[in-house]
Image (cartoon, rainbow, N blue to C red; front, top):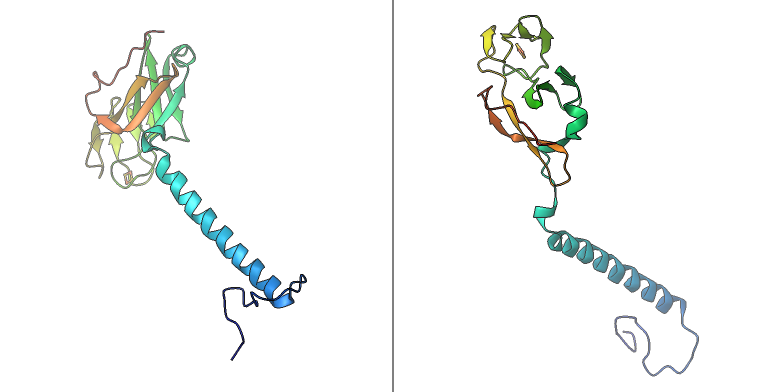
Length: 170
Ligand code: FES
């Protein structure tokens, strides 16, 4: 049975200024544990303190400056976002390039769109016209963000191809 027992296993009455090896290791071990606990708690607390409203939802992304987007006419495929960005007369609209059958990326063809996977076809505004695709290709909400850039929100969709046009005031 040891003479003393405390968290560092040291004799509180010991006047010897030299710390023992065992006490030193116990001290280091305790320090590492406390540091780890503080780091974990601190990281968790920061996560709670950072408001969710400050985070951009993953469904929202920027298209770019309106003057750059509207400078071109026609339809452009964006492979990163799997979307078609169409501009015409100072307006822009954004449509998904993801097939409504099983999610392959559709290609632009003369008649509209065609899916290379199982042969679904869509007309020029994305209405399904053939093959196994059960639904049309949706359009996404386009708006001008606080930074002045054109933003797309993939969580807000419409099948109304006329209402999908967005006309920013440049
Ligand atoms: S994924 Fe497009 S037709 Fe099947």
